[in-house]
Image (cartoon, rainbow, N blue to C red; front, side, top):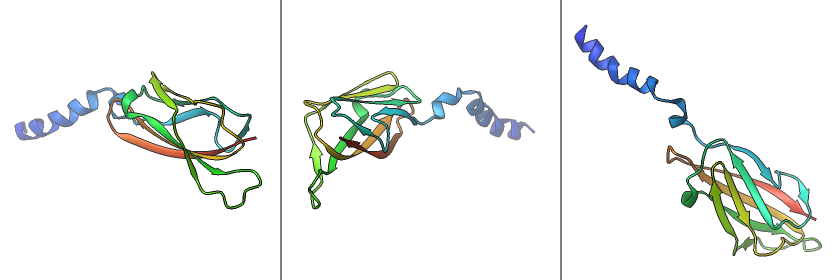
Length: 125
């Protein structure tokens, strides 16, 4: 019986820890939202379910198509600034995005130190 109690103690201690310690950040909302068309944004925001670790969270942004150009090669967008504050990742662009289609890949790290990734597309008109 004593051996069972010794084996069960660590499991019970794990159950007593707050659930947030095991949570992973989930993307709750974004601007622009997935699969939407927007007018020339200069700022992008992504809101997550958990507080972010700023230096470990960010995005990659690629222009995947341009109007009237059927064979446009994907073009990475550079020069933006990403800042994580609480649950919000804000990306400030150096200038408004030109018309085209974009793929935004995000990665987020919360207190559990697990990197979670996702992506979505949007259009600038």
